[in-house]
Length: 418
Image (cartoon, rainbow, N blue to C red):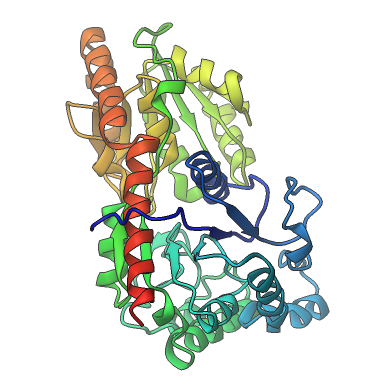
């Protein structure tokens, strides 16, 4: 792609949450700051919430919608917004008319905003790029999981499988609604055909959505960090492993706990919270595992210090991880990773170079890889140095901006020709 030297484009960034709810939202704010630091004018479009950060564009945000409420009346009332939000389309029109963005970059817009805004953006001939943070364009349930198992039943646009498998939070009504959403957006409105370019943070996600039948143009551009702002530590305190992340079944934490249960001289620190925490704590208590500690949610320096003091970070996922920030951030701190051979993890965790991979869900294989990794302190340090070098060379903010700007410039040039 050829970078066009011209005035910096004004960019409209859209994401349904305007606070750091999860990894997708962190990426949204990180991208916003990166673009602003490069001199772009950045506009925001999101949803009102009491947890929101400040934004001068908040008057354009859509009203708060809570899809977690269980009562039927609320769910029925919000169904239309989920499928096609007229409010979002109206409000983004006002933002466009007043602020005149050159290009729109959509992040996580499903349900609370809806892709109705794509129609409005294209009515103004504004190029649209969209980051893929999950598998929503091919899986109504986002994760390609059904009953805690990998599922590709919707391959080729067979979205009714989501209803038959009851894979959307166990609710038949919500499953029917999400199935309708997928058919409406992909088979009737063909709304995602209007997106000029999709951005995938992992090669795995790019290949998987194509394999599932998605027809849009997808470019690979991984997540990034600022390695110059992160001081690595290649030493460690004792024989400690760290897991950091959500405590839910698909994250594979139980497999990790079982694996370290057979290695009593290893200490495992579990950092994070989630719906499976009580079940995991009960398992540790019932089995009398004194080498497993739950530290709860952590952030900032406290989290970083725990990671830096460990020998290794373990990412035992049992679903199609995309481009996990937990791996990238660990590498930036000089820590190798033992990761499941699943999704985009092997793109980062390279055997005997930046860590080790193991068969996802296989506690015996994981236990063997942990023993191998921890048997040689010099090897651990070498892996950590390799991991840090990989981040500096391939996952820096500057490299990400260059890739992002190339995509922006190309779709802008194409729009000018139409």
